[in-house]
Image (tube, rainbow over the protein chains, first blue to last red):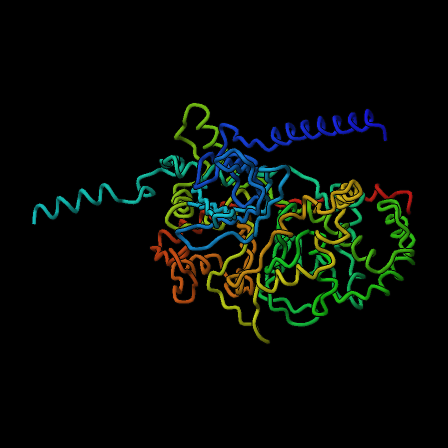
Length: 141
Length: 415
């Protein structure tokens, strides 16, 4: 391959690499929307959670949209475990919610059924290099 | 002494039950919390919604053919019984006995078929997640209809009218179907009819509507639809009785399961209720996670587009269900609509009358209940007047029952 062609190929690759770096950083930059049902910092995490509807409906199947970032601005891409309990009665839901990551830091969780009126505690567990982080949120149905 | 008498008179004036001071046509005072609970018990009837798992749901000819099948004894072994023999229209679509003895003694009470459309779980143990799969169950049960599918297919195929009506309704040739497809199709036709079995507005619903309207307009304290006694019962129901913990929403049921201390022993062993119900559901070929869910067709499209994890949206509840130790001995929270017409009560029909049921809750055996935290159920120790009031309120939940009527003209070309 002539040098001119080789240097052009190297140049193009370098441009593509730089472009992908810019795009990746743009995608990975993790920010929380305002006005969610839950919007706060917990340990090293920034968390936003939005239920599919408000007010929540007793006995209905609900889903949530969660955005989870590290305080550094990086998106969290690990596993989320979730449950919800009624602290006064010491029982939880009859269902085990599951989460799917739709894009880095963005998750859809479903399988939430709150079958009794009263105080509920939503519990999300995240796993980072620094260990597990439990996020709890109380609400009344 | 004089002070004591004064105190007594004052207390009596303050705490005499409102029912004694309230004429029958006045609305009692309700605080914001009570109003919210009352509002949550409606509106009624619910918005009619097609069951997406059943392609025949809400189809006129399917409802009529399902109605005919519901009364057809050929569905059972040796033509012994039809669905309607145990779910009698004149008895709120139940049988009025504690335990039926169909082909053999049963260990669960026959439930009413009122208002079954679009509920999350069916059966005392929630063994099924659709009305059509629940409709298949008695056909397969040896102690109930014990259907001989091969014989049924033969006899229905020889019935030229039925064959024609079946073809018109389903687009399927009866004789060509596999036995499983025949079973599922009959289940779906039966469900289409049962979706039409509904109770209309009860006096409670009219009262609730009146109260909600009054909230939105100028409040009117006169001409309440419920009597003062019924309203006192309502206050117990949504207040100290904690009945709405489980009997919530427009159906007066949260659709889930609970252990209220009724015996789970049967004549031949133990009925584990929801625990075995979940296990049965997980192996049921007719659950919403199986191939007979008509909503899966959309999901198959999604799978072809590369999304292999897609679960039909109407099966998400089933797929997220978890089996817990506490499910042991839990039974379905029944709807209380038309409860005055659905005696006997409880999963085993062990309580004969509505007043006996009120007594049961009033004097609950706490030692029989399992609760690690604050007890959800506790004995109410109601006075005789309070018991009467609670019963009066429960009786106000009855509305007129209606179901699809015969429409022979739909299959006129088959005659």
